Amino acid sequence: MNIRSHHDAARHIYNEFYLGQVRMATFKVVHRLRIADLLKEGPMTIEELAAATNTHETSLHRIMVTAHQMGLFQMYTDNKTFSLTMISDLMTIDHPMSMHGLIEFTCEEYMEKSLDLIHTTVSTGVPSFTKATPSGEDFYQYLRNDSEKGSTFDSAMTCMDTTVSPLLAQVCDFVDVKSIVDLGGGSGNSVLHILSQNENVTSGTVADMTVVIEDSKTEKRRKARTRRFGDAVCNKINYTPCDLFKKDEWKGLPTADAYMLKNILHDWSDNECDDLLSNVVRKMEGDATKRLLVVEKIVIQEDVQPHKAGHDIVKLIFFKEESTHRSFENFEKIFQRNGLKLTNITPLGDTDYYVFEGRLGTNCQNEAALSCFSMANRLLNVGSPLPGAESVDL
Image (cartoon, rainbow, N blue to C red; front, side, top):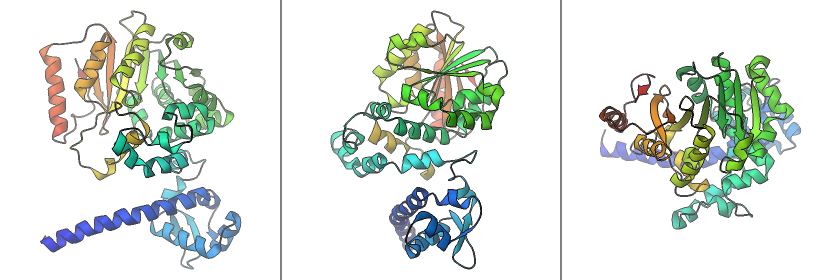
């Protein structure tokens, strides 16, 4: 490839950046008009769609043609009739694998404003979210005070959890676990997968913010769970409100064989993680048979893969500077500081997620354990995954 060809390829990327904004705006319009839900009963003409959405027919047609070019909808040969595609099918609100919650979160006004104000974060280090809302609250406090926003965020997290929770339930060893508490578990997606895949686990509890728990107990959420997992599984789960950083509120949580923190620690500083883990350790009541499962993504900054780019920017606009994805060694140190022995590391398939299992006791400091961490980082640094889905015992 000559220099001109390289430059042409580079120019194409800039064009994609420009059109990406246009396509995103188009996507938000068809979502806000609920076009996918209108089309789930069958094809409709542009006249019918305009009437149903109370919009300008010609303008809507141009939006729909662009959405067709994006693969969102199928346009018939008459150029005015549209139907769903496999992509827009997942935009419908009641599809079993619906991405509606993630789309709603993407379209939130505070998300748009936070991204627009990201330059303020770069200048000051303060999350732009605090400037995007009138109250100036931190992200989780904002969700606590607005049940609708909290529900939307939880739905978005569930939408993004189509791979990790099923793998977690299948790959991890729950043979000795009869009860589990998912700390910050949202709508309970992870626990439900564990309960459905492991018959010996007979009780699951989700502990989260009051606003999240109240939403999870609604009839709408209950029906959605039952439709997906069935009554037998759903009858094994309980929802308990708890501020995980307030040790007094832990009294309302049941004791369990296992406690899980999935996608939680990366939102908090090391000191805040220590506060949280100290509450977990206190709840374990000195029982070395109980275990803590920390499920987190290991991010390698040198890993240049476009489909992964951007996740850290979301953290940048919402959370304080100290929140971060951590390395294997970071997790070893966090466990050790809190009196936990890191006993097992399990990769979840070909994802970037790993399960760090800890039990009460002084952490391993033997050569085998340290060489395991060195090997893991060495493999990750060259872009190779840890082999298979086998656990690494320490």
